[in-house]
Image (spheres, rainbow, N blue to C red):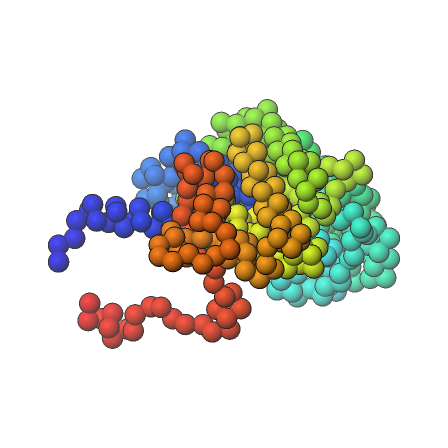
Length: 481
């Protein structure tokens, strides 16, 4: 059978139509920073001068790329306040691992290699404890207070109790709860007084860039998610880059690589990625983003990200409970909606709201993280007020739908939320739902003219998790074709 280019294009487009991307609507995933990836930033990674370069190419054939990487390192050091940066880690989790290995190598060099306790607040990113265990550390959890901050008294107690073996603290700032830790400087000082180092998870750097620098308030090492804060598109497993910035005393212990002596030193802990500069082919995106935005642009982006989150937070606060805010009732660049009470009043869970949002043309917020049964929303600076208002309208309408269940007007088990999302195939044939087709698929005026049709409806998640099946053709059958 003859295959033509047009068929391939149509196949790719059919796949695209199944996916809700930023070209369809905002993606309000908390802790993911799904910001705009501008075409002008993506264009350089199509140039053969970058794409055609082998990671192990002789340096005299790669001087342009190396110069770009070194300039990007300088910019990241300026932005974060750190003294040295390693571009080797390929992801945020790999940045965590590299940062902890760097800390352990430094402590061993000063005769403190026995230190093996890592303090991790319960508000930290989930990868933190995994990275700590992989570097041989023992984890001691630190509680959080009612406002979502690290419990300062619990932290001081555990830092003191483990002072002789204290290696490091892993802290996310602002926290995954969506608040700026008010005692972060004091926390860093106590760690240093007890002989430990401070690792800051930089996943939420989109709330800091241009406003404050981690290197100025206490952390010794921090990873950056270039695929979040610095505009590399991500999702579905990649691509990513998680470079780490460190203070001067940790610089000699950063990763090295056997194919170049430009990075690392004799004291380096070793290699963390197969290529010397990780996924170097996508670094032009972050370089272009930083250069085109400039210092003022980066600062304004952060301000807009925080403003957008607080705008949505304030508008929704009369309809939903906001789980954590600061003393002034404000959030950082993201916030957590507490929808757990609806389980008792209407048999509605966070997943039901997430599924119903698809009918309104939105990707769901982050589900059950960092608190089980909640939704976390992060709008980023990229969205217009129109799109922010559209998300608010959708969530207010859903709250009204929940209210009808609470008032007994609608059944607790057979309702518009429990049956969401609704596909186009469901509209064909007999309709037995206790609500109209229009309510199901066209809940707002905007959606009537700009409908995103989900490919499938509700599935049984638990059954799927417990009953794996392979959809790949049998190998013998594959060979026949």
